[in-house]
Image (tube, rainbow, N blue to C red; front, side):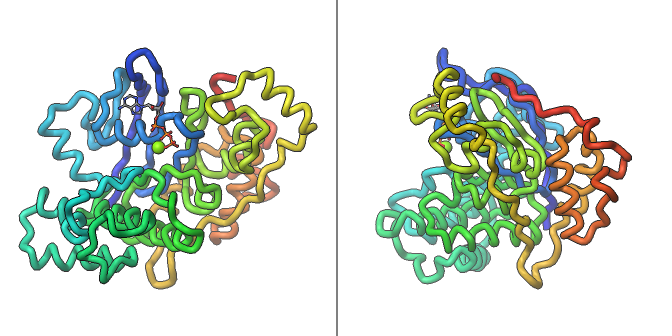
Length: 350
Ligand SMILES: Nc1ncnc2c1ncn2[C@@H]1O[C@H](COP(=O)(O)OP(=O)(O)OP(=O)(O)O)[C@@H](O)[C@H]1O
Ligand SMILES: [Mg+2]
């Protein structure tokens, strides 16, 4: 099975005409880890995913995969690199005139020389995996939105991708199917060690699925790092987002003017600071095996521990002892740092 690859984004900026969508986005998707991208509607999450696979061209910055800069490489190399990706677009992007079987077989027929018998095995395996066995002959127009979503997922997985991008895989799914989907993602990750980036608006997904969370906000990547950093952040925008509140810096059509946001926060009188309790991360199903990324991430997070805010450090240590790793004694990191040595989180645009 293929192992995940690192995706390194450096100083990426994207505009359409004179409107800047986001600028100076820098992040690394660690190999084999699951990352989630959050952000208010319209902040450019889908544009970011499309940029990662070279469908949209950012004006500035680089995207490095296997030492190739996707922003600058030639068409042939881009085509090769794209084969590493499995992508679920926000709208599913199924071909309306093809039945589900042919839709899901499409990447195999397009990119491989596999015989039809082998294609059949792969398609049936993926369709069973997403609960669509028996629906092979249906057209996308004849099935529910949630089924289209799952068909899109099956199609994204047929080439055994090393990098998996899902744009709101859980939108349009009921809570039970969302729970199954999240478990499926964890199990897939354990089986393949692929690198995941998932855009979601589902707070429960953000709390339980990823190793890392990023937040796009005010045309910047406001945060990207271990999940515990965002999930324990007292930033008003994070608290508003995680609690799904109307009061806070995020408005209906765009970001509110800061005066109104300040007024609302004063009216809430400190209540905005409250965060939902941290939930444990999902484990793979029994029998699936361990996620290889867990040990790698542990090392990575330990190395950056001293740069993280105290609340995040405590949450990481609590999570480590739950997973059976020895936690550092007395709330201190292995590096002997005290909590008050840590720098506070920087939020661009505040
Ligand atoms: N091809 C395009 N040409 C011009 N503008 C575009 C194009 N694609 C996206 N945009 C604009 O970029 C902005 C970000 O869009 P995007 O779809 O990435 O938002 P999003 O964060 O995914 O939102 P949502 O959560 O609602 O899916 C929007 O203002 C959108 O109108
Ligand atoms: Mg989108």
